[in-house]
Image (cartoon, rainbow, N blue to C red; front, side, top):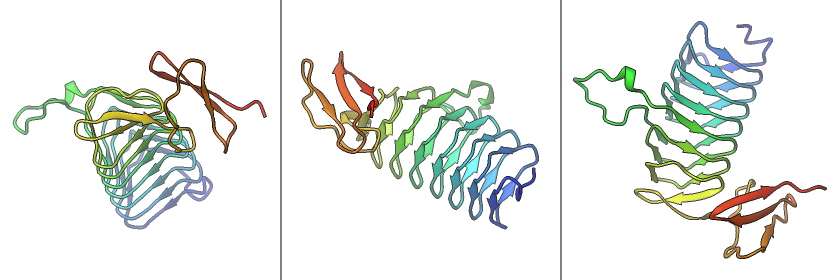
Length: 200
């Protein structure tokens, strides 16, 4: 891989295993380890002491803050933010004395999701687009798009916009909320939030 041609910055303390695929304009800071099978898109940033496993796919413009490990069978779409020291898992019932490498469960994270600092994501679930997982939350089941999740275990307490603003409630009947920043509209239907981009 021609790091200079791809405009990839790699700190001298970091390790990039042969075979890793890294997109253009990425920044890889101190003591990061990226495994050989990892596939990473463009414009990503990896903070201090990040680990990326072999069976990992990461989209474009993903920001991973300090002390985050992205283990095998984790898939991150574009524009995901992983806060400091947040945790992914890939085995539901680990035991040191029992090998469960053939029992890894997929965790799928859709576009635009934000993970707060120190939250924990149990494996085998999907996090819907633009969901926000609060700092310190424990997520043990799939999350709806745009949902705001907090607590242990995490529960939904609201909805968030694509720009990270809390959507005022209640949204009832045919009422919708228009984002003053983007002009996009949000409509609640059967406890799912429907987003429409502005035409302007």
